[in-house]
Amino acid sequence: MPAAGVMEVESLARELDAAIAGEVRANEPMSGHTTFGLGGPADLFITAVSRSDLQAVLEFCRDHKVPVIPVGDGSNLLVSDTGVRGALVKLGGKFDQLSLHGEEFTAGAGAGISQAIAAAASGGLGGLEVLYGVPGSVGGGVYMNAGTRHGWLSDILLSAEMVDQDGVSRRAGPRDLEMSYRHSALQEMDPAPFVVSAVFGLRAEEASTVRERIGALARDRRGTQPLSLRSCGCMFRNPEGDSAGRLIDAAGLKGLRVGGVEVSEKHANFFVHRGDATAVDVYRLAMKVRRLVAEETGVDLKLEVRLLGDWPDE
Image (cartoon, rainbow, N blue to C red; front, side, top):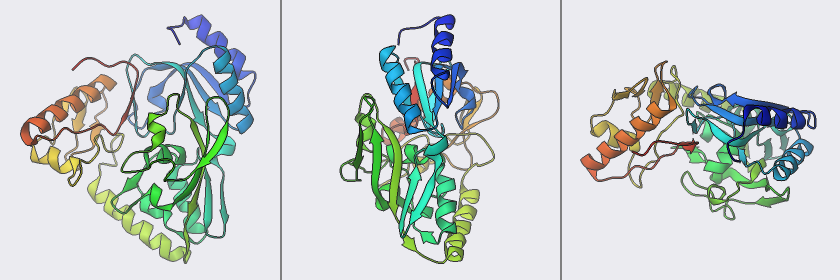
């Protein structure tokens, strides 16, 4: 979408908002839609609350030549201060639904991972709690193959349903999606399809047993992660056989700061927002950490966070 004037964007927003049950906002600051609390305006920020909504949004954007970018809960997303062109589309409403069928657990892509874990535990199903502590939505979790040191989403995923930007639906399993560490084939697809639901294969257990494991995971997380400050989770992917946090710590970079963002003293792979940061502060700190770790160790760290918008040359 070429840079559009304010009036044009607002006109598009009004037209689409009248056509769907969800919400359409023009020139919406992304600072309210990311866990970092940062980011400039999206031309259009759309919440689709049903499949008919999503189909209408996709058709409208095709007709008006507006690029569509699927987004989740903004937990792994850094949007530039200048914003992002096109339509950012989040799934909500009926896409938040959760259901149990024996040992199969179906989650809408808009549901939060923490919400899904709690529902599975209440239903006497174990296995999903290996993702405890992963922020964001189920759809985003499938997109990035979310995981912790206790397990990966791909270990329990039976299938995911996707809708491509032509409105065509299909199902695929972990092997079809080429899921590996922090990766799925969805990340290479352009334009990106929407994950609309996921089916997990879990195991029947006493709800109290699952909740006890969740409690232990919660205590471990509180002791190792800077939960009281805004962040987007881990900034870098772990290199094979090592930990990005260990490498950053070994390079003496805990507490390193650019503007209002700093490398956490508690977990070196978390960058925390100290209250006066900009998105470019985060980006510049990430590039500086990457350079210094490479100089110290020879390892080139790869970003885990997804960047949207324009960024300076570093």
